[in-house]
Length: 189
Image 1: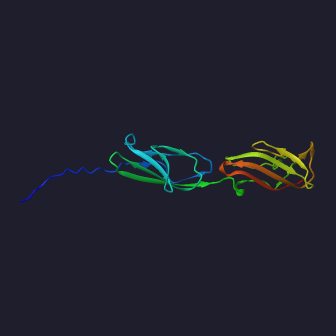
Image 2 (image 1 turned 180 degrees about the vertical axis):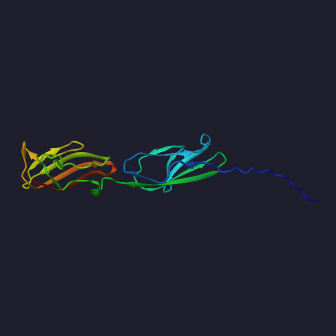
Image 3 (image 1 turned 30 degrees about the horizontal axis):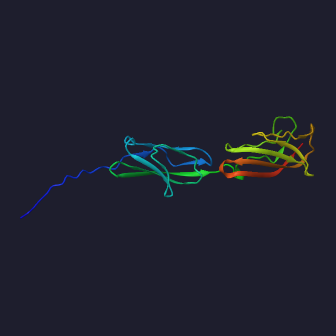
């Protein structure tokens, strides 16, 4: 005697989605929005992970300020327990490293409009605390807390003598915190 039964099996496809982001680099402290496309996200659960650690649950679009590079993984799980994953590689750069400062090593304050002032390019995520200039005897002859400070090569309303002067730049840079950059600038006539 043979007994038979029938079972209906419905095969459910995993949820379909993809990240709209491509692999990218951001500056330390810069916001990044990771986004997905999926018509089913209203009923699905999407979670974000980095190095196996959950970053956000139920967030189809996730805004963060990455502090470390890595592979940011998005996982969608539908109501049947089926899941799909996609990921994006994010690198994090830090514009506050010393080589990002474009600081001149001399000025020629002669009024011709070229190199008349000591100034430097300020990276976008750098907040200037102070710029100080010292003469060869260690006397402070200039100080500024402006975000784009400039020194015109004078002290007390008089033109400084040709020679070497010491500068210190104190700044705060994103998540790196306080940094100090120092060096020499020469006045040429």
